[in-house]
Length: 473
Image (cartoon, rainbow, N blue to C red; front, side, top):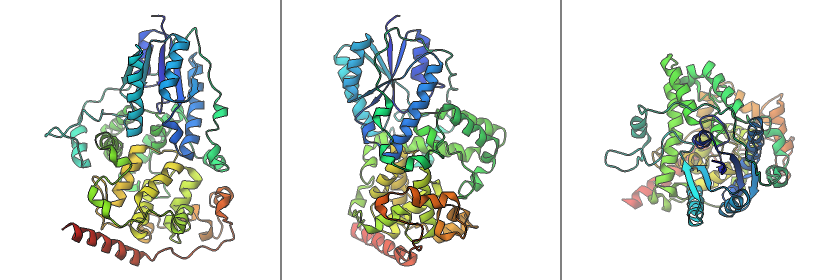
């Protein structure tokens, strides 16, 4: 009973409804919370690393309020954990499961090494409503289409969230912790961290407030208004889910309560939560989705993989297509992009520009503070047409039509593109202040001509699609 438990936290920075933490508290044993800047975390892009640092700082404060600490180490996960067991005398090392391919590889290696050394390594249900292996088709396989996946899970019993512990049993032998300042997690952001910090909503308390704000109003019209780009019609909880600052069970039961009270948009909101589950379901059963075309027949599609001047203009938000540029600048200024915008810029890159979806996937991986490996991969393949449950390739978003429908007064466009506003606001103007100096962009630059004619780009994409089909036949 006096032997401490090492709790290895990853992207699960909360106290409430935390299966691993809950089990440790109920054991009555001393708890040593640990975070490791390991071989997987080192691969994160600039914005995710910065946001990780913010999450760690807030989580550390949460633990300290309960009389505990957060021990920080840097290095290979296996080696750091073995060292910590020797320093603390811990025989038990616990963690919450993760389901993307890189994390599974790391965790498998860690568990094998710990067990071989005689330690008790135990993993717990992680950051999903359903473990990927418990949802099966009637034939016993995994789901490849979202709609039947939703029907298979929507009526399942989901346990209610566990409460926040009142106190954590402290260790009498705390190991040394590294200083997070020395990690410089935001260094790759340079000046951009200053502006993105204004938009991040960090920590468990802030996540719960964000959920309650959504339930108090926007959920009612969520289905009808969620695609309107300038409106606060979505929950924005993807950021907090990505870092485990709120559990999906907490959101699910809150959404179900709203549904039972008659909120018209509640079911649509719950479907979006399950869409995230579907992404991890696919990443677990077909891990190739994160790195290559899920449908192998798309390997012959003539996407260009060259990261050329056109791609740079897409990243800079200077394609000459106003809605695309607004979305790309929103990404760079806030670390976030509206979901409808993600579909539009993804379609534009992979279809009008005929660039490989991996280019966009990597840029989002570097820029999003709600970056999620499974959702990002599936989203890009959905937009490109190469993934499961994908939009048909001939469904090509027209940014001009989308702008008329979902930004009719151009409030979204003028919010982020200063050249298109007679009186640009601080956000639009700050883009030139905080974008990389290597881009050599200045506010007095004229707005560019379109990088591609939308009609010509559409026809070119359709011709390539038809040629691929003919070749296959």
